[in-house]
Amino acid sequence: MVSAGDTLEALAARAGVPAEDILEVNGLASAEEIVPGRLLFLLAPSGEASGAGELAVVIARDGGPPLRWPLGVGVVVSSPFGVRGGRPHEGIDLAAPTGTPVFAAADGSVAYAGNGIRGYGNIVVIRHAAAVLTVYAHNSVVLVSRGQPVRAGDRIALVGQSGRATGPHLHFEVRVGEIATNPLPMLPEIPR
Ligand SMILES: [Zn+2]
Image (tube, rainbow, N blue to C red):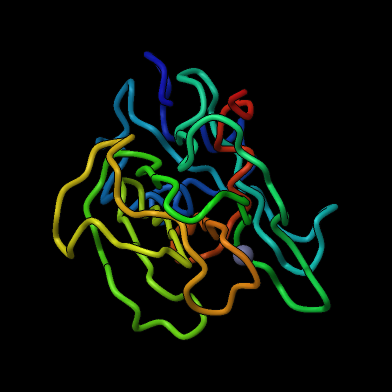
């Protein structure tokens, strides 16, 4: 979140990334759109510890985590983000019984709702500010339709095992400027 007095140059220097990258990743036309209270995604330079050209997302934490959990209490991360069996796993898997409500992780609008993406089953994609997409896959039921505005915490689907899934779970992705990104740093502590 941008604090009073922050400038694009100061944010870029603090994050160690070029100012133009901050504008591009956040879909901003100019530095004038960087105002206090605005949530920004700052992509750290690739090639350090994480390897594989993966981009880490650094978020100014002043306002707390930008996303809420897409499931309620008792969230179980059954498979983490990263390489799994030699292939990238582009989200996290959250185990939950079929029919468990799935919530929008932040305000936005429904960019896609349907079953047209191979392997994902019944899927919802929500477009948020700052070029961020969240993806909710393997649902038994989808409760929203394309173009619909949603608020953080709205029910958007019910957990299932549609598509390529070995049991009921939610596959949850965060994409920043189309790049699949580990959701965990953007989420609060796991609710108990
Ligand atoms: Zn998954």
